[in-house]
Length: 437
Image 1: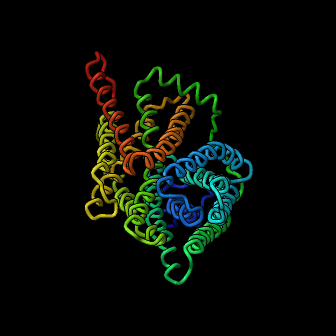
Image 2: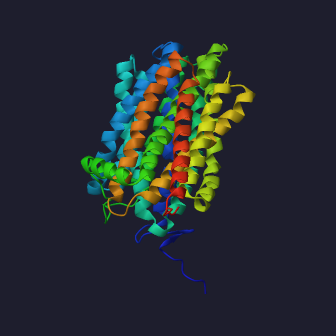
Image 3: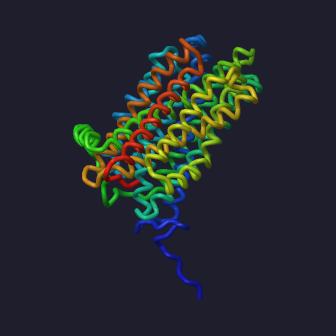
């Protein structure tokens, strides 16, 4: 007689009571589509700036920086509100509403007639993305037992990467397909974003029908901003490793913003300067971004193995220096669409994800038990501030100096944090009582 299936397991994962296979499959689908649909705006924004608003190529970096600033300010407000609302009305309701708002943002985006319109529609989009990305980590924590959280985070990360690469490939290709069928470039962009909106609507329905109904039996701890600031600063005063973790968050989260916003814009700019049509330029321009993201897809496994075996400061130093090499290598790129540039974008993707994972590992090790939520909250605030500063400044550098300059700036900052880790590691080794890894 066959042994009965364990109702509290989903493959290799131990799941919480009441969580069914359908809930888990929906959560995994969410991991695949969530970040992919969020990235679509990075793929399509340079196209909209040219096709709808006629923004000159030498001003597009600055406009991207402004839009990034608007997006991140909106997200800072949305994350807390979405989390509090989820505790009251349920995760699936907030998740579904988030995808509906994202769909609205995508439908409105190509209707903009000026930068102010586009900024307003970016706020609508940010409301949706803030709700959906906030809910992804929440439902994974709700559904999987603590001992298997590392496994679900790894699975989610791989699905995130697959979603980004596949959706960036598919949606970025659509304008050139539609133009080839006789559409004008503006209408082709609207049609591509309408398909992205349709995917958001399908995902909203999937969340509503597939996630566990009702309100969670336990709420996620939500730390007030004032508490995060006070406890976060106090922890940094007593532990220099936490200072480095905060610095790495500022740089590593800014890394992600730079790659998403400016790799595509750089590729599109180069294609237009080579005489490509706008639709073809977007098709070609997404190649550097896709190459970088594809390289980052499986590299986390390598980084995770290194972090498990190495001292955390040594591991973060290696990750940040690798990030520095990846970003600084863009100095040698003349044509981002050339075959010679592709290995450098591979190195960029590897460096980007290494810095991100290394920063997460150090704060996970160093955040104290008492006030842990506040310290990690401050770490996340440093990351958000990094996106604000580097994403906005990067746009100005993109226009004023060169398309490679935002990447070079981030490369220098990666290297500075990496050298700081080496300095502290050597200092600790010389101290009478050496700290543990």
